[in-house]
Image (cartoon, rainbow, N blue to C red; front, side, top):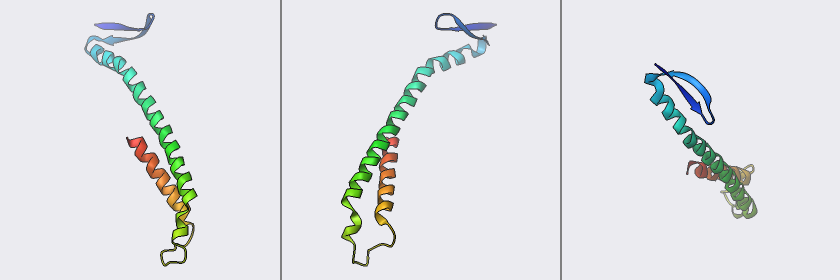
Length: 98
């Protein structure tokens, strides 16, 4: 009633009851897909960080607060860093979600 599942060159995984054999085979066949999904997630995370940092550099070079200085819209505190951080994170998360 039990079956032995071998992996690769004869490594015995475990004795599995007959009703559970399709479940184990399904899990073993899904491992490559799971690994591919993890690789894609890591690549997306890295690309998101790189593009988020690029957006931060562009916004810092533009310095948007210079356009509102001397007007009622002039914020208190460091508005540039708030904007830089917020837009950088927004770009990173959008890339990661895509």
